Amino acid sequence: MSLSHRLWIGMLLLCGSVVAQAIDPYEFNHPAQEAQYKGLVEELRCPKCQNQNLAGSDAPIAQDLKQQTYDMVMDGQTDQQIRDYMIDRYGDFITYRPPVRPSTWVLWFFPPLLLVSVLVGWLIYVHRRQRQTAAQQLSPAEQARLADILRQANDKSAPTQAPKTVEQTGDRHDT
Image (tube, rainbow, N blue to C red):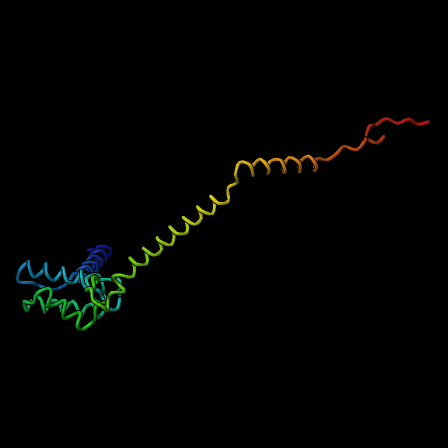
């Protein structure tokens, strides 16, 4: 076997081991347990990564939480029991859908209230702007008077032609 073949085989084995490490090494007794585990690690948020779930995080804390989730699934605990454990330990932040209670009202109600208040403010602004524009329109009599003033101003500002000088006409009478 040549050196290049050995290098290719080594690279393939290395790539295979990297891919194998990316897959969770957990074994389940039933497909239902595996589905429960996968659902929970997709749903729970990594405390370190913040915007990544446990399934997509490689942080050490995420690895620990995946192991804890696996152990709890294998012990036969329900999804709700596992969620409650994680929330008790890490707070509402651990879930992407925190429960509605006084401590999370800001998360649930502030964005819609902000949106409604911005829309109401915009509508008030547009309404006032339309009233101001309507109030600023001239009546037909005012428009006629304005046209007369502008016509008179244009007539007065039109330049009057001065008589042309000899240099401008080109007529020279040298005597």
